Picture 1 (cartoon, one colour):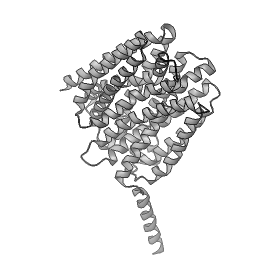
Picture 2 (tube, rainbow, N blue to C red):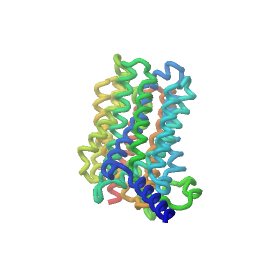
Picture 3 (cartoon, rainbow, N blue to C red):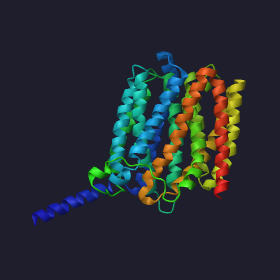
Picture 4 (spheres, rainbow, N blue to C red):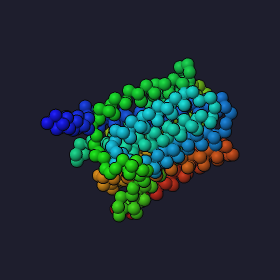
Length: 408
């Protein structure tokens, strides 16, 4: 009798732990906020790169390599562990990602040389990659049935997080002592505070299979029978994240060359304008269909890219930031439309795996071109690299818009 009661009490405790203290709607918004903080951390180093360059005397190619290490680490995390949360649950994966992210922030805060930047960004990429697929899937799990709020919050949180992270870091670097320390310490505090929130979430996934099997790396998944459609729609992410990769790596350097005062604040403002306008656009135009968003976003991206290229050639800061704002609107629409179309292909039991594949495409699109542009800028200068970037991104924007017509 006692044994039976003990078993029942344990089962009740497990059920209560699984349900969590947070409601599903509260968990939805908490997970969206957590994603914004992860993306804040991703852009915080951008305004600091010029300080690191002056301090350790490395080239623009090395700068873009430091950014690319982050993207490559995200890819590895997605390729190896992108679907793990479909098997062991969202909470354990997010707790592990938070622990690694805190270590990454400590490494970046104490970095004594450029080698430590590589290490810190690699750890950060691993943490963000693991968290990204779990959070994207959790947003779909917790969204109100019949709504499309998961992809919307995903896109808005990404844009707002990157904007706030870059702008806040630029302001702290410009006006607060300890320019390469303060931002990281604030982020460490935010991630520590997030741990109890993750523990309070309800667990939306039942563990499947023996522990020794589910801990094996899980590959991202193409939705069954939809490989060609997925590849066609993925051109939207290719167009959007080429822009994101360039702005997060070389964007602050381009902007600083066009102004004379408050260079670090201006460097942070560069990413903030792109990502901020992108996030706000997704919020205001969330009722648009995915295809309409892509078809309107593509020409806006092309106009914005022309403005960015023209500003580099004419040395105009005003044209650069106006072009960046227009580009941000197009970027937000392109990302929103593409992400909606791609996540709509995923079956419920493979949400994390498909989300992982989406971000594999995104971060390949961000990392590879940024390194190529860094190499170009080292040899031919930032102006040439900026013009080449604008032409390349415009080409893929056209391709993305045409892909919606072909699909239709």
